[in-house]
Amino acid sequence: MSHSTVPRTDTEAEEGKKNPPKAHGGDTAAPGRPPTGRLSLRLRFRRDRVLLLMTLPAVVLLLVFNYVPILGNVVAFQEYDPYLSDNGVVSILHSPWVGLENFQRIFEDSAFWNAVQNTLVLFVLQLLLYFPIPILLALLINSVVRPRVRAISQAILYLPHFFSWVLVVAVFQQLLGGAGLLSQLLRQHGYDGLDIMTDPETFKFLITAQSVWKDAGWGIIVFLAALASVSPDLYEAAAMDGANRWRRMWHVTLPALRPVVALLLVLRVGDALTVGFEQILLQRGAVGPGAAEVLDTFVWWNGVRNQDFGYAAAAGLVKGVISLGLVLAANKVAHLMGEQGVYKK
Image 1 (cartoon, helix red, strand yellow):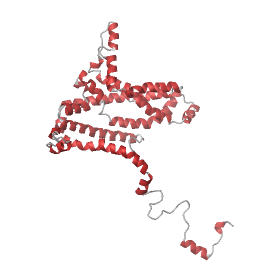
Image 2: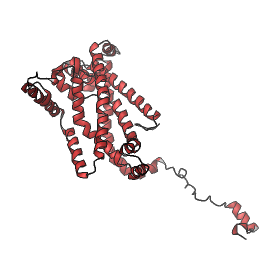
Image 3: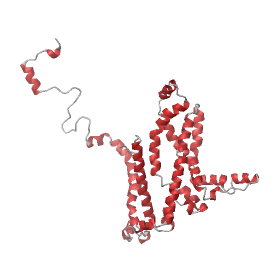
């Protein structure tokens, strides 16, 4: 007879009623402690206090330089005059309130809409021409068998990222300017020279080419890191099933890159209205504001050069609101595609 069928005495039965056995695999929570699996805020703080102290300087910097300046957007509703006082807060408090007048001026200003148009055109071009190039280069470098060749290629492509925009514009000037290398070669062979650096019609393509040359190497690192996480067993299994190199790339490599591509695409869409302030400002005088004016240079020109701070702040606020809406919309599209995006649902 098994142990479970042995009859118990009346005394044992009474003790079992008073002290019922604990459930298998579970422990009762201590007095004053949340149920098993959940720690109180005080216990979690004690457990993670070292990590919290390590992140405290970054949080302070974020608050001081990113969130506190948001309060300065109040000047968009004022005729702000920074010369009323040496203290910027006092100047804000004493500047006259104009309500939505600055926003009305913006929507009636043709220069503002020209800046919006140029910004969107540059964003679409850079999204179509610049965004896929780091992916293609990462796939190309990842297919190189020799590690030494792969490392040298990645270093060469990554090096321009450390160049300043002044140096990048100077390099393109020496190559594509009126007295540049390309123009000299054309003149030596009996053709007219080209001055692409001062041509408003090709300016948007010039800006995109500069961005590709400078920052494509930075994007390669992100995609190579994603490719390094792909298990070699997947490639071996696909090869055993008869998949050639292109099939393995289509069914193994690209699906591994899909979450990273979705995340970077959301971030890129959120940054759509910021298309390179310093890069364009350096070349704005060569092609004129009609071709080179974007929202960032529009804000700088009206705020810093023309001293119309309230008007410039209103334009910057409109840009920020639109950028936030683009981030939320792009993240929603990423969720519909089954990806996480910037944040989870």
